[in-house]
Amino acid sequence: MTTSAPIFSAPEQVVAALRSDGYAVLRARDVCALADCEPAELAALAASWDALALDNYLKDGGRYRRRRHSCFVQDGATLTPMPHRAHWQPLEYNALHGGMHRLFEPIEAAVAARPVWSRLLRALGGVCSAARGAQPWFIEAHQFRIDTTDGIGRPTPEGAHRDGVDFVAVLLVGRSNVKGGETRIFEAEGPNGKRFTLTEPWSLLLLDDATVIHESTPIQPIGEHGHRDTLVLTYRAGQFQGENLA
Image (cartoon, rainbow, N blue to C red; front, side):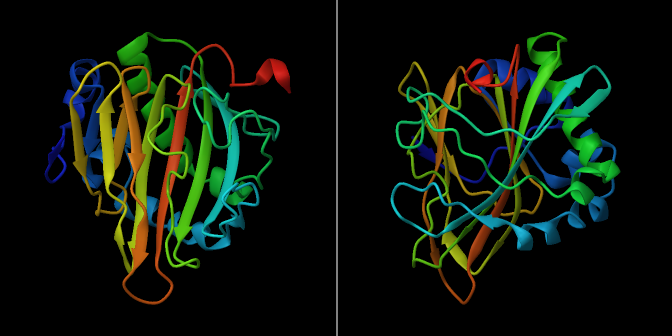
């Protein structure tokens, strides 16, 4: 495993990076170029992370994670919000919280109605189609805030994992008064890995979930009200995970 600053890809190199390395990292300005939006439009979303509800499903008893969750289907240029549903993963992908129907508060309607929201989700779906072939994408959107209420916050309490989808997009919304939160990526079928820390708001990590395993290390406070905010978007072909179990 090597430690370094993120190796960023240009927007036109993202598909090639996904195919060769299993992941790509974009600077915030290139996320804006990809989504055809202004930085201020993305920045305006950040305030909604202050209104996330406590995650009451953490099996370690922690109170360090707040989140909201909503689902969408993208078919070509059309993005359709889906009726609110529980989030479900099998135990093989999430040994800690798998097998549970976890119903979180939905993402606020005013957030999902912003034009930049749909442009961002559609743009990333376009990348998925370029890498895997054009098809409908079943998207789960997760707003996360990991804080240091307990003295330490765990972005991935389940450890290094895959999500059981086709692609995972992790956008860093912001960090405040914390250290840690290092991203670690491992080959699913090999010995190699990378580690780096995203620090720029709205920088993006895009993962091929079939070829790499990922995790983020715990955060610790370096001041009051320490927290790390992310937007995680998963793209899956065929149907939502657990759809036949709902």
